[in-house]
Length: 267
Length: 336
Image (cartoon, rainbow over the protein chains, first blue to last red):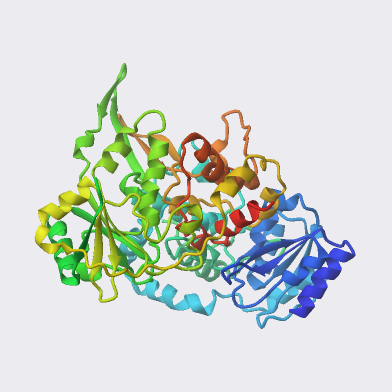
């Protein structure tokens, strides 16, 4: 922790960066994203188990981009998100400094993107253990049972789009649901429209989801929508043997064609 | 009418609920397996909670459903035939165990939906709603009703307000003719007031809403908005959980020749909300949208609607994925 604070302070003092995105403690004791521009205020930075937000979501936010060069506190999922954003040309690696944090909470020395890539490659990239049980339980259900499970769960969706907004990979300026000529997805939050939205979201994240689980955590009504994208993460690995966010030059699994791709799913 | 105090014993309360549930729609709070509290129609009495601090969603959907059909239409080659909705078919609903913040929100909503013209659907739904409220004997850090002119035992918006006594019985304040109507159906369940003081939680005042309103009048260009909304990710959770947020969208949905026009929840926090056809967006960044949210509730509504757009329930803050704590922000605003 002291390492993180002093490193952040140093970066701001010597003007290597204009802003540090990290975590602070809010008034109710929750950790939350913080944006620090004044070196004196780096003391506010915290890092512990409460810090689950995927801060990479801010790298594409208009107001944050305006702030200048950015240092970002980054756990493994955040580093993978940054890698994905670089690969999709949304973030210029020259404009960011990664304050990497290891799984045991230590500050890593991430000098550049190749070091970050090396760290990611050495890491366990599977869906986190805590999501394995619910994923396995869903997989055990028959197709019909699974469909009715999602039908019931998604009927609660209020279409607040917290899942989309919390996701660093959902950076489109105009999301498909906001395109209204034609209106692809019903605007109203009914079961049918909700299912269309969540299936669409999951498909757009297939091969791009880095398994942070933020979409599910952000949902105010408790829909485990992260299980949809995480299931696809497993499927994409089964088919293509790749995990998202592992290289600055990733091919998109659903929009890149290779002559030796398996086509067993095409009827 | 003059409010009257009554006593309702624990076992009589159960009878009251069951009698009402047998004869009409009653909307009551239930704790789900994931510990979220949700309102359901006519749950069994044993399922109902009296211990919730706040339900995940407010109960505004009773008067302002997330989707409200406005009309149906049939298109032919030359003309459209419109079929109106019969608001007479909207059922009567009893709200059970809603807290004073949520009950006060109906007045706030009314000030919007009946600002110049009475909204047909809203008015009909509100007219057909009877509120059996429940004072709060518990609160948490997110509660701030006392900062917006309310309290854990405010009677505003309730027809009957229940308050728990030490022994588990309830004081029942009968506040309106509608409330009296319920009592007169089952007079044997109500006893004279016991004069015992009910258990009411304490909610500390965090800010003065008058000061906030006064400060906001000249704070439109303040750097506060940008600095304090950087972490806002621009979802609609706050607006959709809020009992007083009333923004809606109107859409036509057609299948073949048949179609319907409906209105559904919308949020000023979304970029699309103010996007013009030309492509210009007067609120093109999130800080402007966050400012709008606060301004509307604490400056524009007091000015235009003579009401506040906030009842201090704390849902926007407890449900925010990034801890945009509104009470904290308002506390700061009054001193900027």
